[in-house]
Image (cartoon, rainbow, N blue to C red):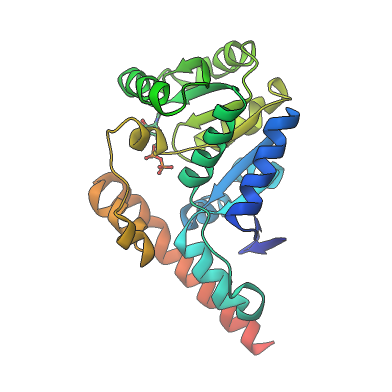
Length: 248
Ligand code: UDP
């Protein structure tokens, strides 16, 4: 079910449904662009027309951030009382399992060559049937974007993982999606760092109490300042919307 949160579209579905959609797309070689939405992205999109258009163009927009679920439940408690997070990293892992079963081709853009080497090594033992057809590091400057997209597209990947940080990764996907008519494309943020072993995800008990975002904020200081810039505004806007609705 597609709804809106502070003017941004969002699909309220379960992890099972999201991975089913991805699995079908992988089997049928059909393009889908996936956005994993969090509060920071909602605020950034409200100030950035290109990013806003990018989110609108996505085929699947899943609630990655705890704050998105909080807002949905606060604004529409009856409709969304059972809504759950779909962490992008977990959705991706499900896609990788399917890609492995189907011996699909994966291309990866982003992060450093060191991380990409470690990742390729880790994938070889975890997903031995996946063919990593191309890896390209994410520190080459925007002027190389088209060239990189063309090189990656020429490898005909079934799954394209893009880790350039948001919103750059989502905008890159939206800009060059025309070159990848048969690929699933998803912005994976820091997931490559986790899969390569560079970073650890929050322990399960922290995820269970919905504080993974705080764990990440505290373990990556550059993220703390990003969150502090957008989270108070997100909370303010959600509360303002709630107030408006309760008056009308
Ligand atoms: N990254 C990149 N090029 C850049 C900026 C970031 O390749 O110009 C990579 C970075 O190495 C990391 C990934 O993008 O692997 C995700 O960055 P970040 O943690 O900011 O994203 P988030 O997880 O918050 O979406």
